[in-house]
Length: 91
Image 1 (tube, helix red, strand yellow):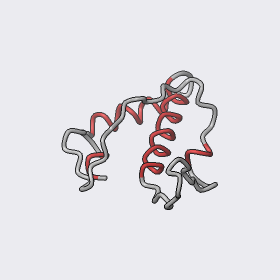
Image 2 (image 1 turned 45 degrees about the vertical axis):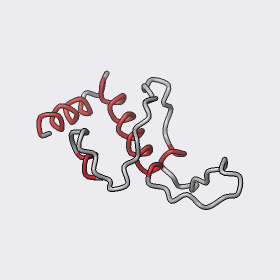
Image 3 (image 1 turned 45 degrees about the horizontal axis):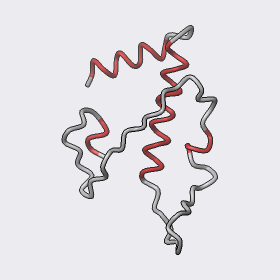
Image 4 (image 1 turned 120 degrees about the vertical axis):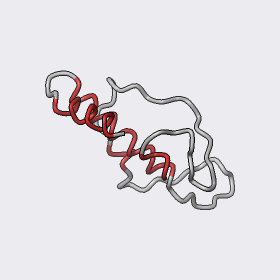
Protein backbone atom coordinates (compact mmCIF):
# COMPACT_ATOMS: atom_id res chain seq x y z
CA UNK A 1 0.00 0.00 0.00
CA UNK A 2 2.80 2.42 0.88
CA UNK A 3 4.59 1.70 -2.38
CA UNK A 4 1.43 2.31 -4.41
CA UNK A 5 0.72 5.55 -2.54
CA UNK A 6 4.26 6.77 -3.17
CA UNK A 7 3.97 5.89 -6.84
CA UNK A 8 0.69 7.80 -7.21
CA UNK A 9 2.10 10.81 -5.35
CA UNK A 10 5.08 10.74 -7.70
CA UNK A 11 2.76 10.69 -10.69
CA UNK A 12 0.87 13.68 -9.31
CA UNK A 13 4.09 15.68 -8.99
CA UNK A 14 4.85 15.17 -12.69
CA UNK A 15 3.38 18.43 -14.00
CA UNK A 16 4.10 17.71 -17.68
CA UNK A 17 2.42 14.38 -18.37
CA UNK A 18 1.08 12.13 -15.64
CA UNK A 19 0.26 14.71 -12.99
CA UNK A 20 -2.89 16.19 -14.51
CA UNK A 21 -4.19 12.77 -15.57
CA UNK A 22 -3.55 11.23 -12.14
CA UNK A 23 -5.28 14.13 -10.38
CA UNK A 24 -8.33 13.84 -12.67
CA UNK A 25 -8.51 10.09 -12.10
CA UNK A 26 -8.37 10.63 -8.35
CA UNK A 27 -11.21 13.17 -8.55
CA UNK A 28 -13.26 10.73 -10.62
CA UNK A 29 -12.82 7.92 -8.09
CA UNK A 30 -13.75 10.20 -5.20
CA UNK A 31 -16.85 11.30 -7.10
CA UNK A 32 -17.86 7.72 -7.89
CA UNK A 33 -17.37 6.64 -4.28
CA UNK A 34 -19.47 9.57 -3.06
CA UNK A 35 -22.17 8.67 -5.60
CA UNK A 36 -22.19 5.09 -4.32
CA UNK A 37 -22.79 6.44 -0.81
CA UNK A 38 -25.72 8.71 -1.74
CA UNK A 39 -28.85 7.80 0.17
CA UNK A 40 -31.43 7.33 -2.55
CA UNK A 41 -34.72 9.09 -1.95
CA UNK A 42 -37.72 6.87 -2.46
CA UNK A 43 -39.39 7.49 -5.77
CA UNK A 44 -42.38 5.87 -7.41
CA UNK A 45 -41.03 5.06 -10.85
CA UNK A 46 -37.64 3.75 -9.75
CA UNK A 47 -35.89 5.49 -12.63
CA UNK A 48 -35.01 8.90 -11.23
CA UNK A 49 -31.95 9.37 -9.10
CA UNK A 50 -31.47 12.58 -7.20
CA UNK A 51 -27.94 13.92 -6.96
CA UNK A 52 -27.17 17.00 -4.87
CA UNK A 53 -25.94 20.05 -6.78
CA UNK A 54 -22.74 20.09 -4.71
CA UNK A 55 -21.95 16.45 -5.53
CA UNK A 56 -18.33 15.89 -6.65
CA UNK A 57 -19.71 14.03 -9.68
CA UNK A 58 -21.34 17.20 -11.03
CA UNK A 59 -18.22 19.29 -10.47
CA UNK A 60 -15.64 17.26 -12.37
CA UNK A 61 -13.26 19.06 -14.73
CA UNK A 62 -12.84 18.02 -18.38
CA UNK A 63 -12.56 14.22 -18.28
CA UNK A 64 -11.91 13.56 -21.97
CA UNK A 65 -8.46 12.08 -21.24
CA UNK A 66 -9.58 9.85 -18.37
CA UNK A 67 -10.63 6.23 -18.79
CA UNK A 68 -14.02 5.71 -17.19
CA UNK A 69 -14.53 2.39 -15.40
CA UNK A 70 -17.33 0.29 -16.82
CA UNK A 71 -17.13 -2.84 -14.70
CA UNK A 72 -19.97 -3.38 -12.27
CA UNK A 73 -18.78 -3.91 -8.72
CA UNK A 74 -21.31 -5.67 -6.52
CA UNK A 75 -22.48 -3.78 -3.45
CA UNK A 76 -21.81 -5.71 -0.27
CA UNK A 77 -24.11 -4.77 2.62
CA UNK A 78 -21.39 -5.17 5.24
CA UNK A 79 -19.08 -2.81 3.35
CA UNK A 80 -16.20 -5.29 3.63
CA UNK A 81 -14.61 -5.87 0.25
CA UNK A 82 -12.00 -8.50 1.01
CA UNK A 83 -10.93 -8.95 -2.61
CA UNK A 84 -10.04 -5.26 -3.07
CA UNK A 85 -6.60 -4.19 -1.94
CA UNK A 86 -6.16 -0.76 -0.36
CA UNK A 87 -8.26 1.90 1.28
CA UNK A 88 -11.44 0.93 -0.58
CA UNK A 89 -11.47 -2.40 1.23
CA UNK A 90 -12.58 -0.71 4.46
CA UNK A 91 -15.38 1.51 3.12
